[in-house]
Image 1 (cartoon, rainbow, N blue to C red):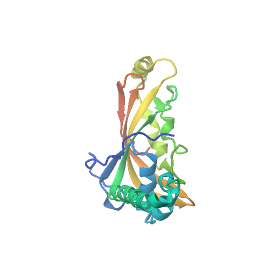
Image 2 (cartoon, helix red, strand yellow; image 1 turned 30 degrees about the vertical axis):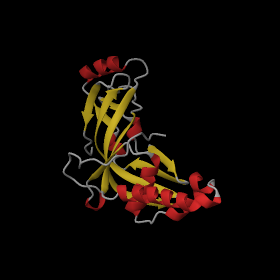
Image 3 (cartoon, rainbow, N blue to C red; image 1 turned 90 degrees about the vertical axis):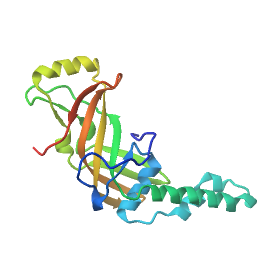
Image 4 (tube, rainbow, N blue to C red; image 1 turned 180 degrees about the vertical axis):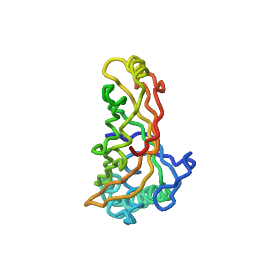
Amino acid sequence: MASAASSTPSAPPAPTTTGIGGRTGELLNPDDSTVIFLYHEIAGITPPIDQWVEADSRVSFASGPDKAARRTQVRAELQAAAEAVRGIGFIRLSMNADLSDYDPSYGEFTVRALAPSSVVTFKALNQQVSLRFGNGRDAQVWAVPQERAGAIRDEMGYGRPASLDALLKITGVQPAPNGGTIVTEVVEYEVRVARSGKLLGRVRPTPR
């Protein structure tokens, strides 16, 4: 699963456009539960917090005299998490680029992690939310001059291990039972050598 450690909202991103509903807030590598709350907030679906409180092991395994206090504690945590995603319109996500070999006939690498068929899945609170890339057909193309491609392959080494840092603009949601899909647009991304973090290229997708 391609979620990561931090989910702290930060300042509005560099691009001047806004996300769905005029949102400008940003999350950095949100964890699974944060994305579940974000999906509910954008979709306008009230999260079943009471249900989640009762399902929390701290409540379900608490002794009778302690249950009320544990419920209060868990409910406060969940409500705070729900409040924290208000106004979020962008996500910065780090993942494996899943880079293809260079195609000299087209002068490009394919960033398969951003392909239209690719999804990033988040599971928490008995819910599953997938994140997909609405402009994946364009975003997956990393155009590189042929004279530069050899140096890039040498930098990556065997197996082409490359990482990806992408800025995603949220454009919509698609509800489904016990979760749904967050649709995003890839605004820009950086490709780096996975081992060293050395920058290989910056890409801002444009429609072809």
